[in-house]
Image (cartoon, rainbow, N blue to C red; front, side, top):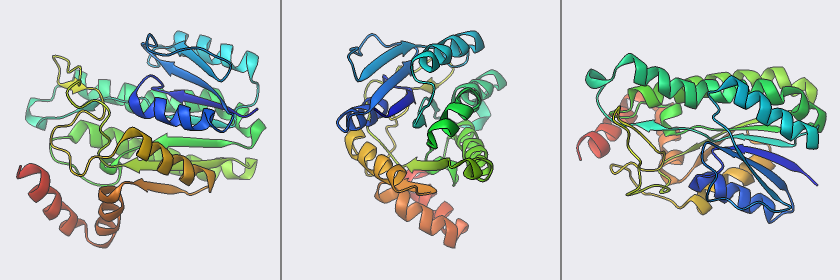
Length: 252
């Protein structure tokens, strides 16, 4: 039986990826700070974990590895968003975005480095269109996702000699928390809650595209029409991408 570990496993996209893997007979460990909505069974093992707490992360990974010394797939899906101008963004909030969106993923990668090597498995980082391009009113979010992509694209070269595949998936707008953003006083909110998005897709659709890309060992998987077109346009002409992005989002 193959084993996957999914951070942010209680969220819409995390659940959708787990369901798809479980349909193929995988056992999935779902890590999240609140797992009250998840059911445990033979193929699904929810685990409470604050990924920004080093002690909790060590205890949780230790529990997983005591049951599954080799891990076939680690999905770095946990994250939060922040929508608003940089003018009102304080340093504490900026660092919070990096703690959850970037450092939680790199700390997980460190914990599962050898178990993934043992399985000749896959690291799958869930980035965003904001990970390869600018995005209006998302300076902190875009910076954290750019960092995530830089880390995992560099890790790819280090881990390839061990038979490990490293995949980066960049969804555009996935509608997982529309109307339920759980917005905090600092402006941070659940991912998938943006009200200024374009051409939303369901979590199930995004999960299917992401996991198909991972299965074929793609380096980079743009997810959704906006992500595919955005990636092509940004590579060809960053200035044109910025113009279109500002007209579509900033102009709303």
